[in-house]
Image (tube, rainbow, N blue to C red; front, side):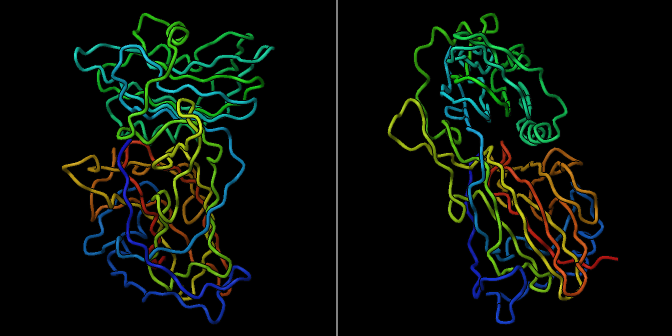
Length: 406
């Protein structure tokens, strides 16, 4: 996965406890940033997923809104992304035990066999550690790859996961036996630098061990897994991390007393930056007693709700952009996917961008949704499900820009 960075924090002041409405004494800590009329008009005309150009307007200067996070009920979350590049012909990149219940698994591994180049299969194996037959029931499913188009894998992986366009039939594993978790992954062949991107959520009724295995295409992953004693060591410098994380669903709410107001000008919400929103921590089987850190919070689901009002009668355009753009590095593009609530346009799953592979640099941004101004004295609500997009540099700011709507 790609590097991450942080952006400067502009703090707010005077947040009061109470209802979700503006208290008379509340004051923000910034002067409203003016929005050029041509920028507002361009954003107002944009549709969810559309790439638009807004020259002369720097989204990075928007102040950051205050927010609070809290853990929500979460599945047991496993991620295999360290080492990201598997440079051993036959190896286990992840091996973790899970209890009966809900499991989320993110496989983000690359065939790293360069000298000599050799095809491989990269597949997850689930072993039934219980005394009865285990049934695996999929709730969400996405398999992208093998592919060298990492941006497509990252954003379409989230799209397929959320839309549930395909769900495998339940998988039954006898006690003491193992099976490939995903038949599509098991049947695929990865060449050098191909990414295998699998994102799954499922329920099991027996304790299990889950491994991510690379082997040659003629060897079943179950066979290879049985003869590999230990996973590869972590590389630390390559990939976001690996292990088991018990917090993978996070609620994002504004503090009591704060309501986003279009009259306060543009404002941005920034999660998954590692500072104001820390990385989730868990455990890793090869390093007992130590803390595993998921740098980037890839695969974590953010449930975002933001109340808003419009004391000046303007609506809001919600956009994102690649503020990390650097053509010399990994951050030359950004591609994402979100689930957004209803606004001026119907809500749903939105590819960012929809009209091209990725968004590169300012002045380009991508429209997510537009929101009409609530009636005077009333409060609207923005709802969004966001997950840090694989293959893109983080964070990916979510920026609210006041606009005039017809």
